[in-house]
Every structure is written in C-alpha cells, then in structure tokens.
Image 1 (cartoon, rainbow, N blue to C red):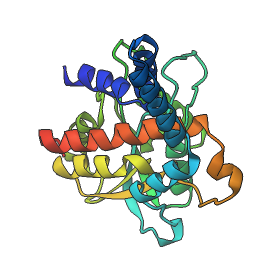
Image 2: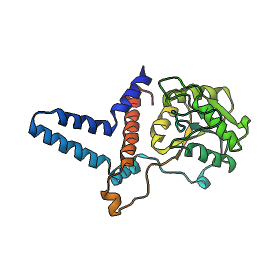
Image 3: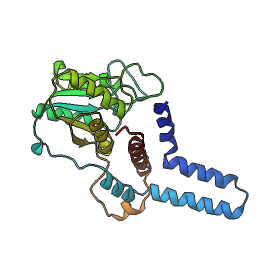
Image 4: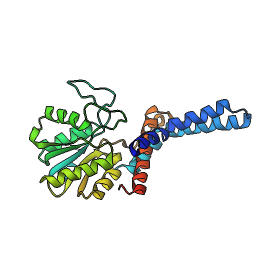
Length: 254
C-alpha cells in the first residue's frame, strides 16, 4: 500500500500539476476578479519553477558534493542503487538508460582503478505493474559488458524502494563476507535519504554521490531570464526527494 501511495503522491507533488490545476480553476471560475488572480498566480508559479537559476541554487543546497577518486580509500564492496534504466522500454539484447547512468559508469571506473573489489547492485522493479526483468539484473548485464567479472557482481533484485533496498541488502551482507564499511553509490540528490535508510538498517556506509543535477553557477542574462522546461523537471525531482526524505523520517524508515 505504501508503495502505491508513494507513486500517487509523486504525481501530486509535480509543480506542473499544480500549475495546470490552478489554470483549470481560472478557466471555469465565474468570478472575474478571482479568474484574473488565479491566472496571475499560475503565471507566477510557471516563471518561478521554470527559472534555471533558482532550481540550480536549490540543488546546490540539497545535493552532496562529488568525491575525488584519489581521496577515496579502498573498499571491499560498493552498493549501487538502481533507478537509472528506462522503465518503459525493454528489449532482449539491449538496456535503455534514462538520466542517472553515472551510477553505473562511475562504479565501473572505481572497480578498474582498484578502489572496490565487488559490486552489489540493489533494486528490483519500481513500477506498480509487474516488470519482467528486475533492474538489478539489467544493470548486471551492462557491468559484464564493461569487463566486470561475474564473480564480483552480487544482486539484490527484490526491493521496490530505498527502505526495502536497505533491508534486503543488509540480509545479503550479513550472509557474506563483504567488508565492514560499504561505499554507497547513488545520485547526489538521493544521498541524504539513502544514507539514512542504510544506516537505520545497520549498515556502515560511505556516500559516493554521482549524477549531479546541480551545475556550476551561471549568471548570464539568458540563463537568468529565459524559462526552461528542464527546470520544471528538476523541481519535480527535488520536491519528490525532499518529501520522501521527510515521510521516511516520520514513518521511522530512516
């Protein structure tokens, strides 16, 4: 039930949904004064949430900073969270990626540079409807393509969200000798919630943030003034993540 409710909440938290609902109210409102105010409110929201500078500053405050590989000590195992392949396209001999492929690519780099010895991929299906191949198995195929030996790849393919991922991963680490401290590889925006969940589950993890949404500051006129549809998308990601972090705290999941 929590899984389904989280998907519904994700939809309702979208700024674009808020703007559309306000516009619909304005269209059907018979009071001319209220109609004008709601149109102006929807325009103000659109300008705010489509501003690249504002959302970038928000991500700079929220996201963990990247870690230099040369400053990283060696780890026995890296835990890689899924959520990066396309959930709307499956093909027998291909894996399609959405944004977030850094989780895989940076882990490959860590392995080949000797910073990690094993890779534990954690994540099943994040869809409400069933998915034929859990995402962890999809990522394993790509890790193999990248030259990672099969004996160095472990799978947790049952979880549907971060809290389940932490619990199922803990069961695997308890049954195998995978080290005392783990490198947790996930998107920078997801670090606060994932670290909290894995520590709550009893795992000693070090954050390795990848897939950053925050960019170097840009104060050019075009960047400041021109609306951006990508900014709307980024706000959707950030609001969803912050809400998830708060809900997990309230429910005692992290």
